[in-house]
Length: 311
Length: 311
Image (cartoon, rainbow over all chains, first blue to last red; front, side, top):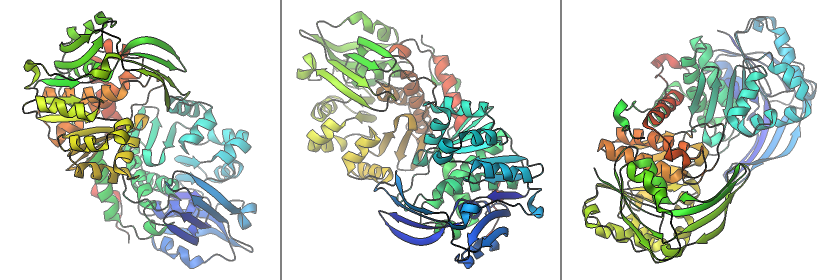
């Protein structure tokens, strides 16, 4: 049931209409692990610089995240700085300083190479491929990507897609990758290029899972206060993959539940700045939110006489 | 179980990226009736001009829509003309010719005044109030409105809201009416000003029902082709109210199902130009789509051990 994540461990400087955080713990592998470790032990592979406040990661280790694949290199850590619009729907990158991440070559420790569940965080698709070269027989490989790779490394990304089972993208990325405006067609295009499963994330509007058997829709959880959308997508992926790894199955029934756990973790992530909400999140709160999702979407099948037989 | 609708019966000229329709049957009362009549007999109150091709409404009569409250006046019928953007997300009104609708004073025939279920289509809120003065003891009053009235007749609209049980608006209207950007707060604001039930429609992103007991979310039905969004909101209202009137109950369980019937009818409405899809819609198709909605949103409650007890 081992769950491997490869991605960034970063320091984020974030400004939203509600405040500002400087050099806060961030990165795709960090958000993913913070979410997934509520379900399952996680093996993390990444790189940090000599300036990284490593004690910030102690809470992950206490939650069963194995950091033996996190290399510390001389130099500066990966830093990202961004500003969100007043309604949090758009963000502008102020600065990206790759630091030691510029030369990152993921090396998977021997003890991690039997991982059954693999999440490839949003990095260069060639590096994502190199990770797959090192794992032996994963049961499910999921990956994330972004417009930067869709535009700049399309061929490498298409090679990668043939080797993954699940692609997680947002609606704009699904459209750009496929050249299809309609999301249903965009998802079919992606499925025809490799991954049998596609999750299209639409932020506050929820997320759609496209399976060979059909579609599952998870709404965005209505929140009165959204502080910081950073990391919501990786928290979603962590909840989704963590749940699957824990239950050890990938049938349609479990995939549906995984979507709800993913949505729950994504909704928690945005309630505080950076990783703060996930850092202090407990199992009872997660289960309570999943119950709330069910309350929000469940309806009893009406009797066949629901509609009368006109025509 | 009588269901009354007051609204426009119009001729629409519509241009979308997929084609054009001239003087096509439209109007809020028309779309509402076409949807609601699949569930329940409907009593329609409205006005048409002497130029109106009345035989166009024959299919409604055959479906049990009582048109004895539809007055024909000398003069031109209400005409609306609009153009949709390439992705159908925005529309521009080219021309509105009110014609006989300019002097419309809804007079509810005696036989309609005991209506239990009332839908006030999007007209001047003062006229909506006049309708309520004429019905005796409705069980559920629902109303629609738009930015034009929110901006131009705010006080009249607020007076009306104190007398209605359910307001249906889109997300932009909910925000404008309440002055709250957050939809959860916007809905609470509206509930505090009268209607205990609020439906916020988000187009392709679905619709949310706010009840005193909680929230219910219906996704937008994923369609590969959307031809014409005109009338989708009124078709939603028709499916919603038609289902409620048919089952004769307004408890939370039936309201949830009504949301799904509303979403189903709204999704059919956009599949063809104007009223065409609703004109030829049958009960079996509606029930099949409701089953598809369930398939798309249902998930089994996970075992309590879904998350392990960290923290």
